[in-house]
Length: 136
Image (cartoon, rainbow, N blue to C red; front, side, top):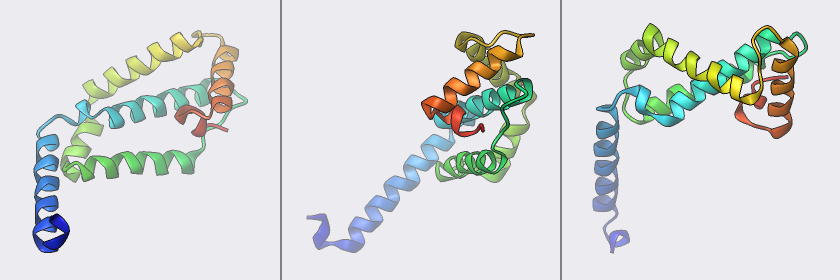
């Protein structure tokens, strides 16, 4: 039935998209799982590359990934100003970093033992996880 009325169908779909985007944008960006999990994974990859001398970050891939998170946030209706405010929020940054450190510990990384970070990094690269794809 919608195919018989393409303009009405398009208007209906666009209307739902705008409504859905507005609804999501009324949430905090910190409640968008794809964004927060992406930032946590990026923080884990960064920490592994910082501590393990034999593993390095894939800088271009990292920037592309971060830009994809930003594009996702924008597609949900978040403005440039809202995204900037979120990424500059020190409390939120500290919260996400604490989660990343906790996950690193759960994965086997031990502070003061760089080889454990290397083991985590190699395991993530072998698994092809998002963390592993940000490392080389």
